[in-house]
Structure formats: C-alpha cells, structure tokens
Amino acid sequence: MVRGGEIQRKTPLRSAPAKPRTVGAESKPARVPQQRVPGAEPKNPPARTRRLVLVRCGGLCEVCGLPLYELGTHLHHRVRRSQGVLHSPANLIAAHPRCHVLGADSIHENVAWARGRGLLLVGTAEPEESTLTLPSGLVVLLHPTLPEYVEVPEGHPERAAA
Image (cartoon, rainbow, N blue to C red; front, side):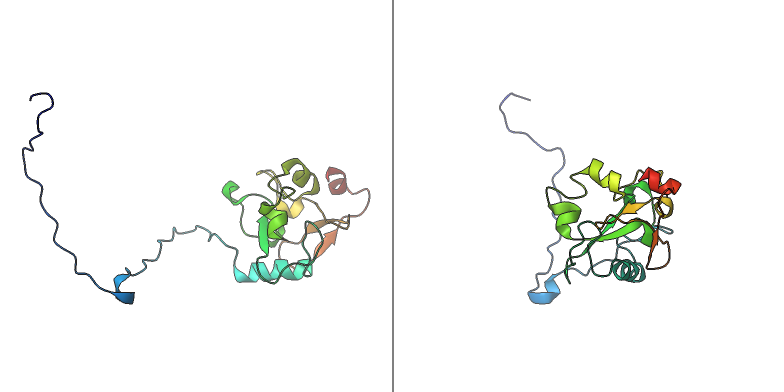
C-alpha cells in the first residue's frame, strides 16, 4: 500500500434492498410496546395511589402550603425510586413543580432543608415510620394506605427525630 494512495476493498459492499416509500400516517412505524420486566414497578404511581395522595393533601402543596394547580401537580418520592422503594402513599407527597424540582428553593436544590423536614429520606429509612413537617408546622406520619395524616404528639420519640 502506497501512502496517500486509494484504498481498495477486498470484497465489494452489498446494497440493501430499497424500502417502499409511503406518505401520511402509514409512514410512521407501529409503536412496539416496551417489554415489562416481571415484578418491576411502573415509572408512575398507580391512579389509586395518586388519588390517595391528592385527597390526603386536600388540594394544598405539602411543601409550601399553597393551593395546587389542576394540571402539573408533581408527586415527589421521599425515598428516591432509584433506591428501590415502592409507590406507597407514605412515600409520596404532592407538590408544585416549582417546589419539587424547578425552583431555586425546591426540594432537590435544598437537600439539607428537605431532609430536615422529612421531604427527602435516606434510602434505608421507612417512609411509614419517618415524620414529615407540614408547612403549618404540624409534624405528622403519613398513613401507608389511607388518605390521612397521623399527628405525632409532643414528646414522642419520632417527633424528636424531626
């Protein structure tokens, strides 16, 4: 081979058969459903769980206490999904998009503040046993199956941890 010379192939390239061209809706390929892994949890919480959380909060953001929007309400996982915790009502709180991830003062931007209020928990924590401080200052436990708060009384060991 001479430097700067033309490169020669040992075998010629095969040409692919031409695809028929179509116009309109027929040109889009059919959507193939994603394979579900047995036992894997869906990305979004089930509708029943979402309703439980929205009933529990009474239409108020559980981060700032202001009314939630009809559309765009986020459900925040107290223990992150990547840490393997299920979509239980005790692990989810309703929040504005700004309070959740979009604002400079959001949960994910102020991790220390969020952990202090029980909005973010470490992966080993049990959401049903971890307190949450509501915007009103009320310290509560989130019920794992019912749409209600369980108030933690003064002097209770769980309240000292909050």
